[in-house]
Image (cartoon, rainbow, N blue to C red; front, side, top):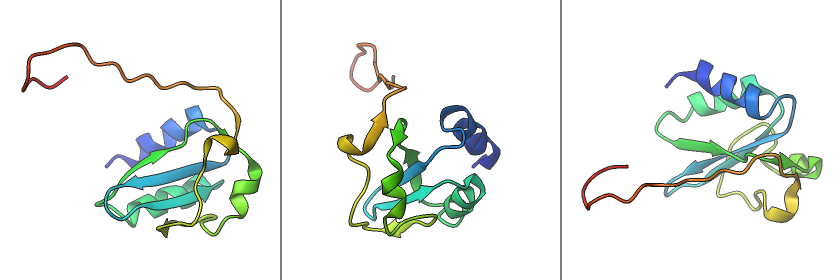
Amino acid sequence: MDYQKIEKTLEIFKPSKLVEIRSVGPRPMSGYFKNLQTLIASVKNNPKETFYFVLNDIKEDCYSREQSEKLIAKPKGTTTDSDISWREWLLIDADPRRVAGVMA
């Protein structure tokens, strides 16, 4: 995994802002980070996990949750629609029509 690309991506999308990352899989994890180096270290400590981050601005109150600056397995709370303070980005995933068995 290229951790420099992770850092560069977060600097573009979330400069100097609160970031929530979550894992995908049977053991969900979540963490709120302001420090990108701490975030990257947390990702490095979990090399078998797949992570994504919340794209839009998160209310600062979320930073006081249990997973502040660390990853927590099965967290009590994660970012919901009402925790978003500003929508700057909209992710659209569009796939062309293809015959069965052909990857998009």
